[in-house]
Amino acid sequence: MDKTTQQYNEVMKVCTSIFTKKMHDYGTAWRILRPISITDQIFIKAQRIRSIETKGEHKIDEGVRPEFIGIINYAIMGLIQLELGTSDETMSDEDAKLFYEKYFTNAFELMQDKNHDYDEAWRHMRISSFTDLILMKINRTKQIEDNKGETIISEGIDANYYDMINYSVFAMIKIDFE
Image (cartoon, rainbow, N blue to C red; front, side, top):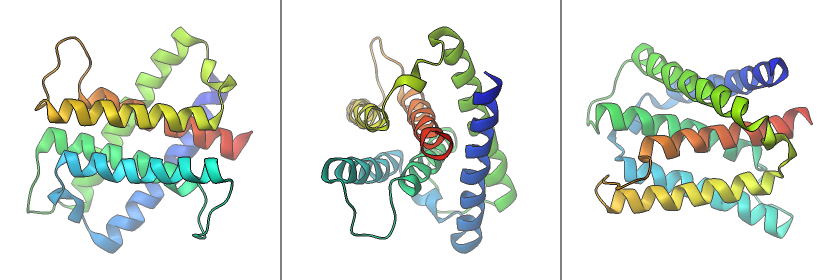
């Protein structure tokens, strides 16, 4: 588990660095996005990953790794938007970073709990399975969004965003460390 914690923290540093740099360039313009738009952005990234995995090549000079980073960062933005709501107003970089760290930490803690129960089964999975699971979570999220957030027995949109984060972190660990 110490190995997983170390590797997760390394991925977290990479994603946080990119989030911070993009925030410097663009500010928090993403605050205007509704959660459904964020879900669609995540879909675009996951679909590109699946396309590259299926075709075995990519024509844009970026592989799948930046797309997994994008999924993580958009899912965290989605969690922030679920809490705060959509806004025409931006927020300070400091506040955005605090929210970002809060949700990434929550995702890490969830991973630790699930990892305990599943004995790191994810280490025996293929990256393409993570892609498929993310796409399934996106479809579930879209259905919940279409139902105006109402579920009868299932977890909500936030749980699906957390799972997308952790599946993407697992994929990045496999890409970067294995």
